[in-house]
Image (cartoon, rainbow, N blue to C red; front, side):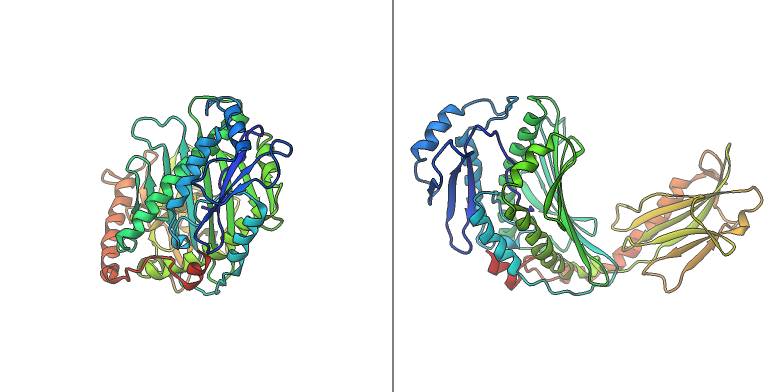
Length: 459
């Protein structure tokens, strides 16, 4: 997680925040509330001792439904959720989920952790295969339908899932062969951590529901964050939080400011802006430990993640009521960085073309296409230019009237073969080729990802 922790709860209630104090193996739980409600500096240094009297009194006042329109959260339940964080191991930075479950509490403590993050030294190193990324997606549903989880967390390296936690199964599981070799204790640790985050994001969702005056119904909360590194060594990061499929809040890493995407999100924004160190904390993670982790995953899965597979290119002709269209397909390529363009002679066509985003094929490779409308009988004048790391030179492909690439308005090739069948045949070839390339992947090191000296220093 980017470790924003709990989003602000009802302003009438005290908030319990949990922090790991550097490398000291203890937790600090603070009773925090808006000025005037409790004396400043109330703090207890053991999560197992009774609540201070002031907090207990406020707790009694704060008993109400978690799903009420005011979204008040009884401190006892919030404390219970926070206590789950004690399950985080001492080397929590080894986690592919980012940092341990810690909230955005007392500024002084946040600054301590943030300083440790900033001290991590990210060694710039280029990797073959274009841009590489490490992204995490978290989803919470208030009322999941049949077959859907209440909470789902998935980690992606280069848009390929490598780790997943599903509340229905209740455990973190590998999604890539090179992660399956990690020792069992590692997965047990991640399972406990994600069970804690399942509760955290549920609280966040209820909070935003209250901001929208919603006490029930089907709603969702999403969090996405991650980092990427380009082939030239440059890097970038992002952090976003959404509600019901719409942007709610994001972090501008340049200005260290929270950006609200809707009027309701201003309430969340104001809370987090009370202490600038929270934004600094996320920035330190995203621009340091996240990139360090990405490098480690690229090392573990190097045979898969840094491989290069050139595209298989085919031009098809489509005849519709609106005229003739040529479509240039690129299939079975990796990495996803690719450029497709249509040319008429020596002139590149820009406004006249249609593109789709590069998308996963489902077998670890990618596919995309671009099309252009052409005058009947002039098809041979147009060429598709393809650039990809797997190609030594720009590949130029034209429509071949003698090939199977002639498609009518119903998407049917001569002889009754559909375009989908054609794509499927190419996919089979790609899968066979992929198996050959992965023959040696079983020999990958089984060391847990992220076990760098810098990561161990953090926790």
